[in-house]
Image (tube, rainbow, N blue to C red; front, side, top):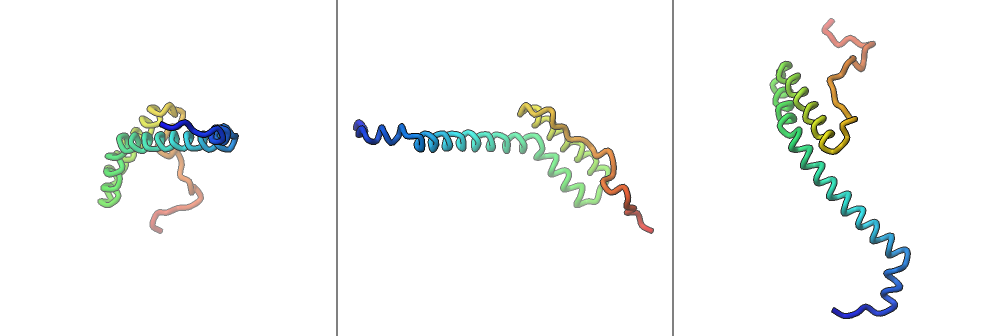
Length: 105
């Protein structure tokens, strides 16, 4: 391999080149983390999402509740795996539109 010319060393030592290398390295690490997280998410919640979709399509309330609980448990397991156990998914504890009545009148 040929030795680079002296002016190439000066250019590569410049601040701009260092910043570009740092940015490329940061993006590579971020991309790898996103791929890892996507794989973990699929592993933890993929089946639960399928169950949730089936319950919705079948209008099956009991299956929906069960699938939602499995999905929440999968989300929480993934968060724990990624050291984000402080993010906890749970069943809603109150109706977001408490001033509205959606029952048939």
